[in-house]
Length: 182
Image (cartoon, rainbow, N blue to C red):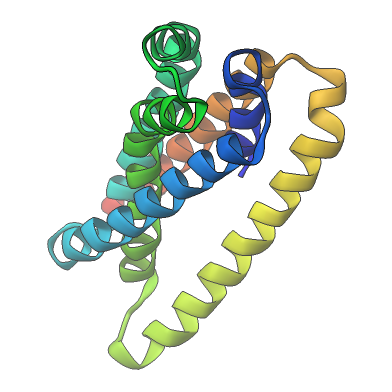
């Protein structure tokens, strides 16, 4: 959610901060997550485990970093070539956020498949994963929008997100290495 909340700040100099901007960002994230859930569900049939989760998290980190690096160029180009802020903001949101959000959506089904040891446990594991995920999103939303943006530049927060994702990825790889050796 920090990534999404920062989108509003990133878009503001080019397209403002109207309901169109938030509509474009929320639409892109919802579509990306939906696609990611579907792709992740199919992927998890064959590929699951802490190594796959670590790879997904590392890929998301790279994608978030790329969004941060490319945002000014993409937004400037889109702003210069579209007259309607609704169209411009939607195009820019899709270009910048769709792929990372698809990858983010893939994590949940792969994680559920990774921790589920039997079919009768899937519902419990899915519920617990979504509980933690949704609470984490709520905390990330408030933390980013109420405090982090008041004290840090957007780039700094984005890089902190990258570092957190790489840290989580490293933990996944360590878990994989430990379980592989046993």
